[in-house]
Image (tube, rainbow over all chains, first blue to last red; front, side, top):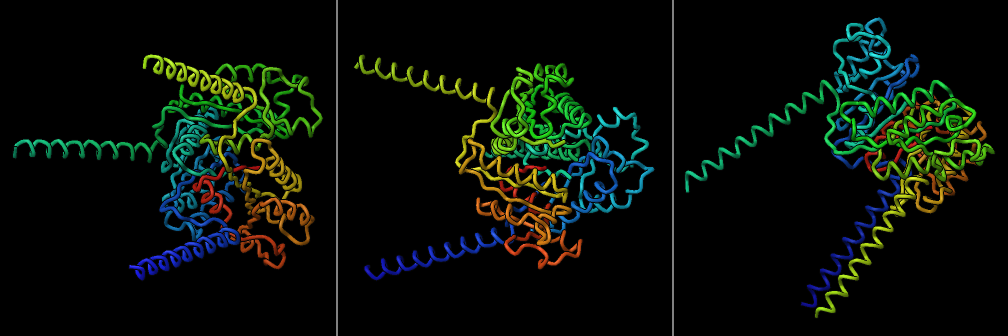
Length: 154
Length: 154
Length: 154
């Protein structure tokens, strides 16, 4: 009896030790290499509200970098929400078709704000036919966040 | 007895079928028309930290578009948090009084950062008397997000 | 017996009254002074993706203002996530060392995006040796938000 109690005490001590070491390891990882991805899936909205070529390309590069982040690879759902001046990225007469299709092939949802095209008198014929539409870009950003998605602003 | 079990099995099958169809419908809606608003209420902070007239007007238009988004209409609480250069929107000698009152009439909380006016030597007398104050704009943005509010940056 | 029931009813009434008064006070505070900080701890990522001196100094000032916000004082964990053009803030040949060390002394995590330094052909030797690295700045921002951190964009 006494022996069994001792054994369980030793087991408890060992478990405590392992838990402490693990916590320490996690703490160090957090300190020196940033956040540890512990969830099974991640969701993020990338906002694009500028028609500046550098901002557009930077946003696309940011999306690719996020999808390739070793902590997120294969676990990240991305939606690109385009509104205001950003609409040029979806125009047929602009040079982003190949890059957009590459993003879409990786599962990225491409969403254009309908308020923007109404305000700017742009018809849907002028935009790529493989994109999606949302009533308002800001509404989309709000709803997605309240559903638990992260937000990245360029 | 046997009959009753069969009936409940059929009911279960029918329920499963309806749930699946519903999930399918939702999935399609998500794919082609963006997020589906499933909550009873939504809360969002709009950040304004620029005094540029185009940014100010764009932020106000974004707030109105969000309030009018058919998915959010009547369900959205908005707070406009103004700090840094954005403070001009609240200055009596600037032309935004009518638009601000229209936003406030729609329930939008108008909040100015007290750090900003201290740093810029602006007295509260120079700002509209119908606005609210918060100790720091960034603190407000942080607390609101941690309370579950979405954030929109211009 | 009857008397005891009456006493408990009065107690109940008094408790209800105090709760109502407290709710009223909270409501007024919310209306006129912004959000009330009710949590024991707050966490926020500040994003810095610009090398503009004004944006860098503004971000540092925003971090300090947040840490000093009376509602957050002693309760706020901050991480500064630097990517893209923002990397200059961590360069040894730039003048931000003292301010960065002051932030670090207040517990601020300083994290640089490894994608950025690879794309810009910057070696870690050129950056301060007291900083941390993350695989991608955007990945860090996404993971932190999904872990419940707030996000502040300059």
